[in-house]
Structure formats: structure tokens, C-alpha cells
Length: 296
Image 1 (cartoon, rainbow, N blue to C red):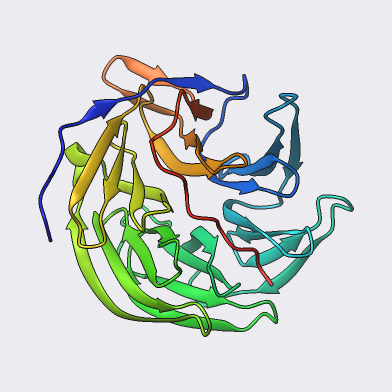
Image 2: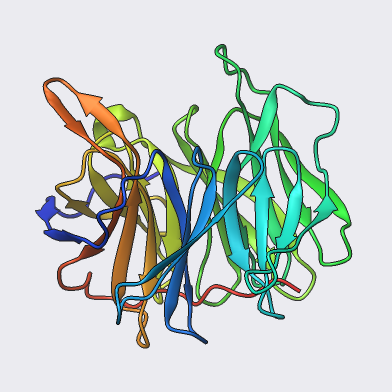
């Protein structure tokens, strides 16, 4: 694991919607429609935002939703508390695809993202007060097959891939660790996991994340109001402080993947309280994002 290479910098943001979110999460850019899909874990609901018109659509879910991704056929793959579902925003149909953890009622599904292999990678978290290492990371394919990839997690989070699809990043928010894996985009094999960095509270405990065009990793520092950019060896290349108490996940968007959106959660620190929301970074980070694949 490496050290720091640059002093922190600051960025301003614009709040996109008046909508207050409990736990805003999982923003994903739809390049076909020019809209942004995101969720509120606790609402629970899926939203779709049109940056051009400012219009937002909402679909309420029957149980807590941890994350979502886009499907090749236009549907949305969604990780609800109890399983992975396919949601059709046109018809409203919600169809069960897989239940990765039917034997772990204390867990719920959490952060997930579609990988370069076209599978939905989804982690769980211990949703009890004690929060032990009872969660895992899974790979779910379009036929509903589930593969357990690793156990011993507490709050699985921060999935993202390098632009070439050869590296997978993954974190555990409670254990404050970031790992990198070797990844085969043709087969979905993730191997050779190694720890690259610890990000404790003061540095920005790792939450949701995104990959960029240079193969680096942008982690939302939910405890420190920042974004941390890590190299593949764990070097902290950049820290960007944002005026948001608890950012939960960045997303590269727009036709050039240089517009950055951030979700956040409702929180209070000291005498400052802030509702969760959807934000857009004013300006860009100087780098494009890595495209995110579609499920199926």
C-alpha cells in the first residue's frame, strides 16, 4: 500500500433536485437516453432524472433497495433486500431473478454494479445492530445463476472496474479497506485479491465508487465529505473535498463521461444537518469515466 501524492483540492457542487433522499445511492448513466438512474435505499425507490428538462420519474419498490444497473433490453436490474429483480420502467413489472442469501435473514443486499462480463456483481451487508463479518460478494448472471465470490465481509461496497476491464475494485465500508482483483472480462473470473488501502473515518470511509479512463478508482468518502482517487497500487492520487456532509457514490455521465454526479445520505454532524440529495460537480475532475456495462 502506498501513501499520498497530492494535497487536497476543493470542488463546488449544484444540487440537482429539491427532492430530499434518505440514503441516495447507485447513480448510473444511461447513454442511450441521456438520463441518470439512481435510488433511495430507504424510500425505497428507483428514480430517473433528465438533466436537460429537470424532470424526474419515481418508482416505489416493495422493500429496501441496495443498488441497480442497466440491462441490455432496457430494464433495470435491482438489488432489493431479499434478492435480485428485473424491473421494467415501461410496464412496472418486477420479476425475481435470484436470491443470493435466502439463509441469511439478518443481511440485505447492498452495493452492486454490472461488470465488463455483463454480470451483476452484488454484495450484501450485515443489517443488524452488531454488524459482524457475515456478508459476501456474489456474481449473478442473466440466467439467474449465482456464484459466491468471497465471504467474511461486513458491508460490501465500492464495486468498480478499470476502463480496460482487467481490474476490479471492491471495498468494505465497515472494515474501511479497499481491495483490487485481477479480472477477466470474457469469463468474469476475479482472482488474486489484494488489499491496496485503508481509508479510516478521517480520510473518508469508502462507500460507492466509480472507475475512470486511466484505470484509477474514485471512492466516495462518506465520513469526510470527499472523493478519493486511488491508483491501482493504492496510492492516493487526489482528494477532492466537496461541500456535502455524506457523499455516497460518484457517477461519470454525459456524452463524454466527464460530468460527475454524486448522491448523498441524510446525516447530522455536530450542529450541521443535511438531507440526502443528488448533486452535480461544477466543472469536471479533469478525466473521463470508464463506461459501465449493461446486464445480460
